[in-house]
Length: 138
Image (tube, rainbow, N blue to C red; front, side):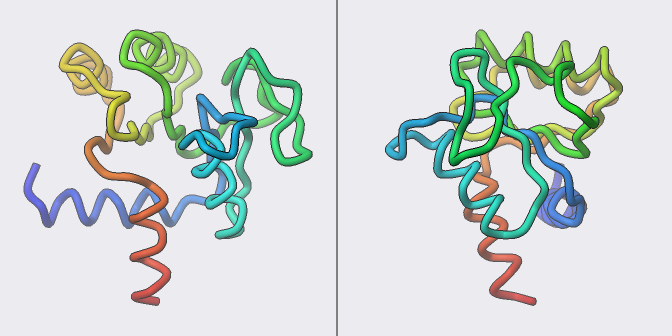
């Protein structure tokens, strides 16, 4: 994918309004917390997903993507690569086509799975940084 194509995909993903953050965390020092908070501040409708948490920033936390009250337009993944594969498999089952893999969440197997299953995938870029850049341009 060219840098220009990646830029278009980033813009496309950030134009969506409903996100889920898989790996959202109650710990303010973790990226899962910071990303969830940043997307909320940017006025996205965002659902935290973590089977080990009841709530994050006062919002109900869901154990899985399939337990969400609506299907997210973008799933942001902030978990280790071995967990990421389970997440993208669930995305495929649920018909979720847009996945943003935070740095460190990706693996060659996950990227290959996404490509083979028609899942648009951003990796190597942080959603917090890219959304800040986009807001600065607007």
